[in-house]
Image (tube, rainbow, N blue to C red; front, side):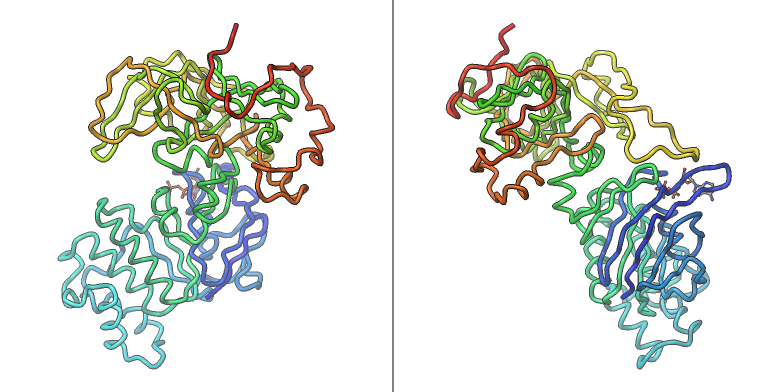
Amino acid sequence: MTAVTLKNVSKVFPGDTLAVDSLSMDVNHGEFLVLLGPSGCGKSTVLRMVAGLETPSDGDILLDGQYANDLPPRERNAAMIFQTFALYPHMSVGDNIGFPLKLGKKNGAHSVPEAVGDMAGALGISDLIDRKPNQLSGGQQQRVAMGRALVRRPKLFLMDEPLSNLDIGLRAELRTEISSLVRRHDATTLYVTHDQTEALTMADRVAVLRKGVLQDVGTPDEVYERPATMYVAAFLGTPRMNLLEARVNVFLDRYVALDFGDQELRLPWHDLRGRAVARYHGENIVVGMRAEALAPVAEGQPGQSIQGRVRFYEHHGHETLVFLDIGATAIIPDGIGDKPDLARSGSKPRRRLTGLFSGFGQPSTERREVDTGPIRKSADLVFRLPPHIPIATGQPITTAVHMDALHYFDKFGKRIDVGWTQRALGVSDPASPDTTRHPYARTRPRGPSLRKGPSVTSGDLGFRKRSR
Ligand SMILES: Nc1ncnc2c1ncn2[C@@H]1O[C@H](COP(=O)(O)OP(=O)(O)OP(=O)(O)O)[C@@H](O)[C@H]1O
């Protein structure tokens, strides 16, 4: 097992293309780390630098703590697997798998046929051992490529979209096989993909890259449940997280209102989340709601809710996705494809934001794709319904909002979190903090002067139309 460390690694290609921008991260001993990001974000370049096929323009690559920028590829004890299987066409499956052993004359206690037999057995291709690659399906070829990489027991696996040429069923099957095989071989794995399902199902940790800049790194749960940026929030999850623009209005000692235009949600003053958001009084922030944070309820039910009319819906067999017009503004981060359904949604014309909400990381002197900023558009709030529930375009629907499951992002797309307040207070349960010790109990949030609102109790925190 090899530990990989990248310290401020950058790669500039001829023509001043900044492919990787000051990337720092670790892949720990025996860890399966997935580097996730859209096409062109620099994933393969990172992998190739770790493999020694590209040299960093700046920064250090360490393998097991040793400086490795200049180490030749063959001395890195790493195996690479690509999306194209690159098997030797004239060799049988067995010869393909055994080739690295014959080449390296390295086989430990095993004979080559024995090692090949074991590997073919582990991959479920023993009966194909005498076939040539052109007599195999895509999935079988990728298994052989895996076997050829695994057989010499490398300490480091570098995989570049190894499943992207396979159909959906095979991908699901091989996802499980690959992750269990490499774990059995005690290797460290750096796995590159643009497929969030692969990342979330296979990884010990996921690192999300955008335009060469690291956005977030954490366990699949961490990056999904607490995305560090609005971009990561939008990139992970299907359907995409609802990202709504909201103005923050603080009603001191009572509640923090999130104003979406025609309607508002309220965070109780005693809730630390409300207190963290209160710092943005008078400003616009972005509120993230995954579909699972929303559930239709009968109108007039107590609790926080949003009302809208069905703009359109999609049957997906096991569920129906319903898109509600709620009179709010949606934010789509730069680099996240616009929803394909927009054409049908009858949305208002969209405009790009400049300055506001644009860009992450430091400006760089090298050329890179221009940050055009997020798109603002009329929001289609998406939530799920069980299949076969009758639904019609234009139908009014009220959805309850699970307030604990909301995400908040500032104008730079960075997560607004309450972690620091919890740590500062030594409070583990945000629902029951001692607010008298909270700094905001004494400090006025910045922004325009605070409005005193009617006092509310948790019982009347339900949806209400804003009085104009
Ligand atoms: N040899 C090269 N010369 C010049 N530019 C390059 C070279 N290799 C990659 N690039 C550029 O660097 C950027 C990152 O490329 P890279 O292949 O690392 O992205 P990626 O995230 O792996 O994309 P994909 O998923 O499409 O393979 C892209 O803009 C690409 O055009």
